[in-house]
Amino acid sequence: MNQEDSASLLASLAQNPADWDLRLRAAAALSAEGRDSDALALLKQPVEAPISLVDSRRLQEEVNRLEEAGVEPSPEAPLPVAPADDAAAPAVAVALADDTDDGEPVYAAAVAEDDQDLVEHEGEMGYWQEGEHGRHFIVSEGGAVKPHEKESDAGAKVSALTTAVLIHVALAVLLGFAVIAMPRPPVPQVTATLSQEDTDQNVEQQTVRRVSRSVSSSSAPTSFVVSSVAASPVSIPEFEGERQNFDVTLGAVGANIGTGMSFAAEEEESMVNFFGIKSKGSRIVLVIEAARFMLTDSKGGIPAYDKVKADIEKMLGGLNKTTAFNIVLFEGKKIASFKEELVAASPSNVRQAIEWIEPINKVYEEIGIREGYTTAPIQEGIDPIPVSDLSHYIKALQRTLEMDVNTVFLLTSGWVHLHKPMDERELEKYYREQKWGEKEEEAWVAAVKRAQAWLDKENAARRSKGVPQRVIRDWHELVRELEPGIRRKPSPGYTMEEVEDQVKNAKDFYYRQANKKKPEINIVWFIGEDEEPSITVDTHFKSVTRRDGGEMRILEGLEGLENVTGDPGN
Image 1: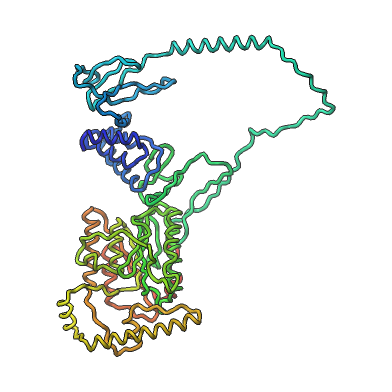
Image 2: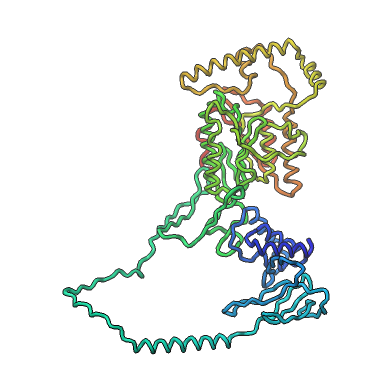
């Protein structure tokens, strides 16, 4: 970045001193020009303004880089100067001194006219000019000098002060000769002396409550709380909108940003007990299946999912305030995230996350991800499965890995067929190899219609009894149960090995190429009480989790959800 870029950034910063992104860019420009001392001084300059978690981390990294290189900050940060309205007019460098005469003269940029004879002063080229406020040195474009301070006006001030004192003395003498006549008040019949409460001895009433702090994910975090009956002189900034990603806490340890405020430079690790898998992380994402597969009768139906959400609420409540987190839901090809990026686990963010997930799968008529729940588009470029073909947990995992995480917890009902598109000729060949013709197709379509009619009748009966309606994984499940002799329709799909390669390639792309530690993935496989876990699926999940230190666990039905999310320390 050239000098003109740094000058314009400093000028913009003068107009917006609370813009941390602008300050960081200006420091980077100064550093690129070889002015590391000025850059460090600018970054350490006290600023009373809120800062986001991202900018706080950028600030700390840049300060650490400069200090590790042995850079010392310059005595003064480079004072940004706002651009003049008319760039062609020469600017006058005038020293601004306050009444106490203890202010340092400021630096100001000036431009010399082309037809002036230039002289050198303090290393700058320009010319002297007598002006209304004293003698000024006009420098060439881009220069900056400390101008001469204005002549002392101490004599004039002393003269004015003496005159004011004499006038007040004369007035006092005149008032001494004045007589004011007032009627004498009547003598009181009873005289009483009242003792007035000494207000100077009143002490502001305060209450201090010490609450033990727990870093467990199974209980809500607590902090040292101070309450007062009087208005507090401490002003805490509010963070609103999508950038509300940092929690300000009294006594936080980290880089000093501004005056009287402190922000944590790094996210704090939290212990999490995720349905029996105990692990920790500072950047955590919970990936939760919201599809109807989670609500089958053998898994416990809607009450089981209510238990899942209650346990997630407990996990979120136990995160440290500076742990970054997010939630990602998936249902078929649909995915949704609480926030597009990770946010700090502040009480407000945790409360919003719980309110966001609470309506999911609350009633039978609204199963799955609700309308209006969205996430950022998934990036292209990971092989072997294109984004258009991604679905189920592999799509949610790829979106999660884009968020710069270090620990992932995934809850899923298991492996789901991942459809692989084929053109007409390829599809004909596939069905021919599978020995699937018109006769098999007609039998399958008829069986599905009968299964639909049976399910409608069954759920009508359940509704009349006030019991939860039945949820099925797919029509293959119900057809196999009602008519075991009907052959299931085949469908081309991606293999488990291709899904495992997709996860591995995503980690390499987002983490290894960026020299970051690959994230740990933990999977909880939620099956029905009467469901026999497939050895093939079990091997697949273990392959995904154990590659970078994760774990895999199987839970069976509603009973399996009980008493699995306890204290991570136990």
